[in-house]
Image 1: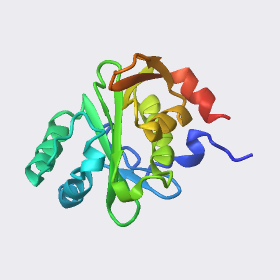
Image 2: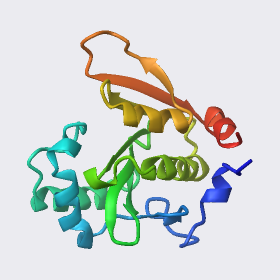
Image 3: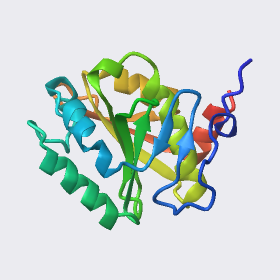
Length: 189
């Protein structure tokens, strides 16, 4: 049986890095701080209508000024929000982030359209969550996903999230929650 523990899939490439800017790795990805050199890829990938359709905080069209403003915000919000660029060796292919770190953090993520269906987010999410639970006193993480975004529901389920609501017809988003204990129990399977 393969080892799905967080330690088996994470290795810090920058020991002692600040809480907001660690570098993590999986078998296929490096999770690193987004940088100014990523602006063009962020615009091209997050600016795709199919991608931005599922994102509550990304405008469409998405401009280079939007990407630079987001990067500047991250520099100022390091104690409240942390983001990881997902890099497959060719450059940024998506982002995973945690906001409201001083409350119950909420996970958010996206991948460029051409990277969908390849398991990248299912690979990255447990590593990022493992870092969050290990580096902070967080007891739970919240998530929201569009009711029609079944791929996102699958990512959350694989990471151990449980749906908390709503199940009401016509609602755009469903909410999810992951408790620390449930995450570690899920990763030991």
